[in-house]
Amino acid sequence: MKNTIICSDRPVTLIGGGSLGAGDLAFSLAHAPLLVAADGGAGQALAAGHMPRAVFGDLDSLELKDRARIPEDRLFEVADQNSTDFDKALLNIEAPLVLAIGFLGGRIDHQMTAFNILVRHAQRPCILIGEHELIFHLPPKLSLELRAGDTVSLFPMRPVSGRSTGLAWPIDGLDFAPDGFVGTSNRALGSVHIEMFAKGALLVVPRDALDAVMQGFQAISSALSGQ
Image (cartoon, rainbow, N blue to C red; front, side, top):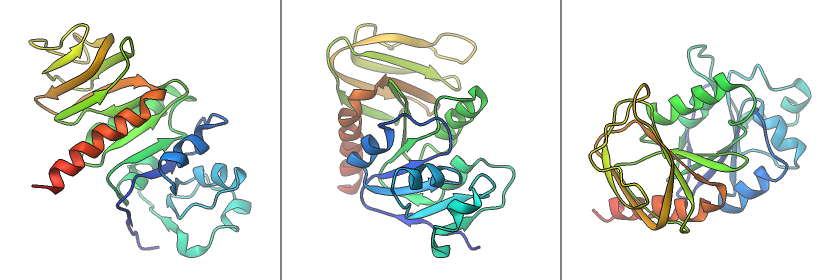
């Protein structure tokens, strides 16, 4: 079936077929009501009483009983064995921000692949929602209204550097690398501003900072649209 793109001017929830906490879907939908699924994630959505607007993937993880419940015009098969279902879905969503659930927990290799995709598709802002944390690719500049004491961890997926204000240990002058220095367990002093000089860094903050992170991305989107 021909691929399509979900276009939205508001954030989108993307549900995958991996580990999903009891309140994850409701939590994400409260912030991003438009629901899209990656392959087997559609089954998890249906089990929770939600029909996804679209389902992307090779559809090999979607059970037949679940597939039968989904209208054919909402199924978009992407038969590319060189990409994951998360990859396929993210590339078919055009939105200011994607909140992704069902991609953390479970198999470590799947989580590592998800981190890789966040960096490779940095032009499509996406926040992975975990049980306790949020993980996302750092844009060139980001301001967050965090609480004093919040844990802020920066993990480089490639050599990167940047500068910051509002962190207990500023990142200015530091060279980060996957096989070198990493910025885990830093702390927010309150308002945090981070500027990165190249793409490739993931940021990890507490799950309950989602509103602050979304506001940070919204500020970026508003600034770009005003140019």
